[in-house]
Image (cartoon, rainbow, N blue to C red; front, side, top):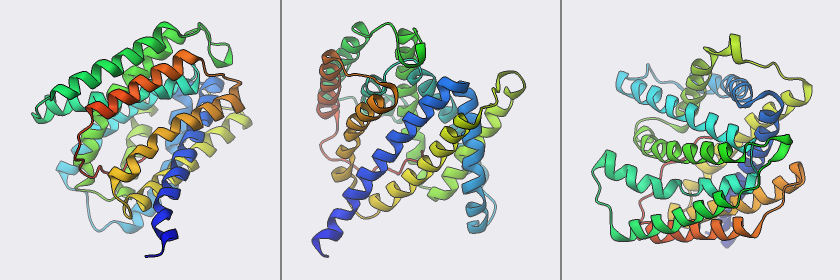
Length: 297
């Protein structure tokens, strides 16, 4: 295969990470405008309208009951995870939020031990302590005030950390789900469950967006689906262990988009804390990795 073909999966992965980071920035703007609940509900409805017909056209038959239960379970986890994350990033800088979210791989190790009976190795404990040190450093030095006039940085940190824990659980469920369902089906059910769960609170919580917020929500929906499809393409053509480290370039995108859209700077303690978390992930991570299943944003 020509060298340029070997490089295409890496280019597609980098593009996907950039698009999903831009999606986070648009959702932050939408969450500031109408709240995380309204932005997430309307985005899930738009995404369902886009991906649902594709899945219906591809369906070979009814979804088995066991797979439906798995879709439903992950739907509740993803809903809580997304609400917490988007609520949190509306109250703190994007780069800080993403740095805190990097603890998810460490949390996933302990959830695998709890849910799957895997043994926790010493290096996982050492890596967790390093990651915890990074979280504490970012939390203790957080400024009391984020974008959009919010002064709830502490609660934003709590929300992002809760989201990171739920994301780690989501990874465990996602691995089980991907063994049984195609990416289009997973994306359809995810957005269907988000819409159904959130619709219950619409009479009291829905804040109908104006034109600018609608554009942010619609744009984030298209970006999330496009990023997911790019990931699916690239992970089918290159080893996951080679592509996975590219995920950390999301921090660079978060710095860029935070600066462009919200005039957010990056403080030295945040860089130090992010470095500690990344070192912790490297120490704790398995030396022989299995191919992870594809995420659907």
